[in-house]
Length: 382
Image (cartoon, rainbow, N blue to C red):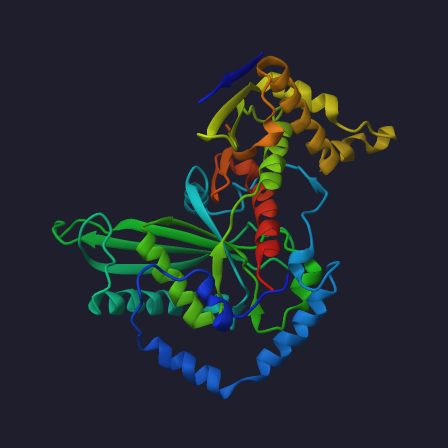
């Protein structure tokens, strides 16, 4: 039956930027003077930020937004976004593995200025290259063209800021004259179903796009982050997908099996032994569905059955994972509870503890991004 293979408060970046510095020191460019002028002429927004921080701290049991926990219940409705989202943008988001980070709110970011941001980031990368910073991607590059665009149709509520897509194209030095530039880096910033109380507490000059995904050369990722930090006084940090989030994804994807076959549920566990033992645990899709169905809370009233089927609570997730671990223990006498769940995958997507995510079905992009947005908001430093 089962297959087994052994094997929140945000902080401004002035004092938190050392959390994630680029590996290479980045030379200062003309954009620094713009930042210096803006910072010197206006300090009042920092006071409003501090007052906002105080308001946000009331959201948790202890000071700071990060004291909150993940929601204990969430809806699982699939969304047909193919008619609302640009097909090219959707094709890029889906079936691509992204490295996740969190990013604090952006100061004076304007969706109406995306064309200007494209020119500024392009100039920034060119200036860094002229200063001698290595920005090579699969060989020497002649020039970089940056494009910012808004991805319309992803937002779930009026409070969600429009998703922003950033793409960098380049042409190798020895490419033919008529050869088109190729996409060498892409990234996006999004907020899907962000906590409304927190979003409303932000000063009006701040835009919250807490979830950042990137794909491409690490040195380009570092440059993009550096430009955002200098231009919008924000900071980035690594976003791991912890064990609780991985368990949520396993349950959410299994719950979708009737609509879209998950084909299998694959989990990788790491046990703390010497040498470390990595266990790959693959469950047949139908077996996973039957177990999931058996742990679901029964509806109290028939009229609520459909609504209940669209929601999952943490107790159901816990029972589902416990059922999987108990079955494994009966067959192999290994207690997975002693280890750490480090990866989950199915036909609908894959997620790794290291912060890498792949969404393979457009119908469940919003469900996945809602959970990851929540994770990003909770990870922000106090």
